[in-house]
Each structure stands twice: as structure tokens, then as C-alpha cells.
Length: 110
Image 1: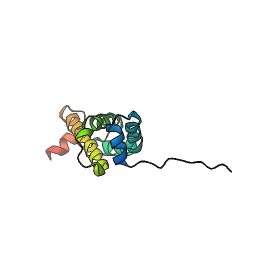
Image 2: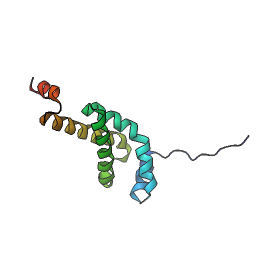
Image 3: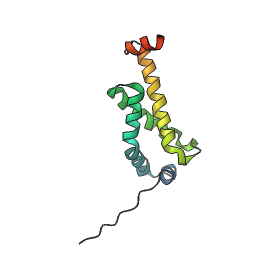
Image 4: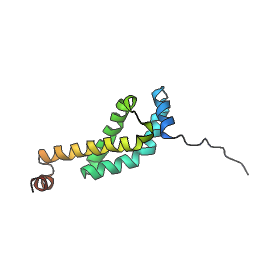
């Protein structure tokens, strides 16, 4: 029987530190870890699969850009989810304004 030694998974704070010191694979690990959560939050916020995929991508781009300013690394998951929620809500409101979501527009007026 062959024993397989695996490296224990790094926590978010360690991945963020690695990312900020230039380790390109660290951000990929972050995306892999949170892709499903971000996609679910984005879909919940904007209600459209296609739009939610774009929102998820925008979320990770925003996180990449804003990560140096992240103060509480231990709250990364909540911070990332907040970015996804805000971007999803923005997309939903924009779609309602231009008439892509007439039901949302009617509900907002009620």
C-alpha cells in the first residue's frame, strides 16, 4: 500500500498573503475555493444564469484589484460574498432600468 502525502489546505489568510507577495497560483486557489459560492450569490442577486456568470467574473476581478486594501483577512469569505451580492444587485437594477426585467421594474414600483 502506498501512502499519499498531501499538503494541508491553506486558510484564506495564507492564500491572501501568498497572492499579495506575488504567488500567481494563490489567486487561482482562491477562485477554485469560492467559485461555487460566488456563482450562487451572483445568481441569487441578479436572477439570471448568464448574467450571474459575468457577475462572478467581475467579482473575482474586483477582489484581485481590491485585495491589497482588505483589512480583515479573516473575513475574506464575507467580503467576497458582499462584492458578488453588490455587483449582482447592480446588474439586476441596470437590467430593470433598460427594460430587460419588466417584472422587476413593476415590482420595484409597487
